[in-house]
Figure 1 (cartoon, rainbow, N blue to C red):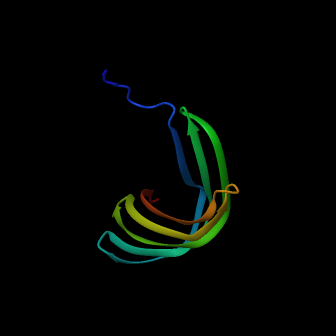
Figure 2 (cartoon, one colour):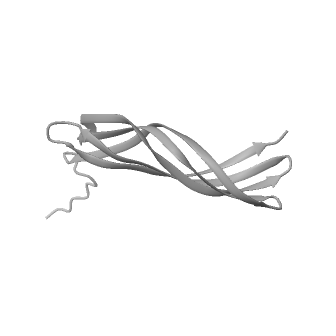
Figure 3 (tube, rainbow, N blue to C red):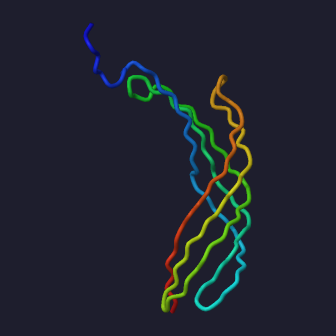
Length: 130
């Protein structure tokens, strides 16, 4: 028998669930401890986002079916980080965790349920001081 070296069966169907944030905003307080030119801090507060969940079904590599649902959600955010003062600038690295509870979605008569909506954010910053 001949060996079949074809890498992919192009007739195969692929289904995906895609979750994303359209936007995310936070209102937070910050407390910390400073020594020399270092600030260790904790932060927390409220968060607001528009979360979107989509179902995509591909056939022969082309998008065949797409359903989506989105909702504006209220939640909480907490995190911490470290900031270094290096006159006339300071640099920081910060971690945040935001939790928005469950998104109740109804994409079609057959695709519905709840999805947990949360995110982890790691970011850095560079601040110029006048």
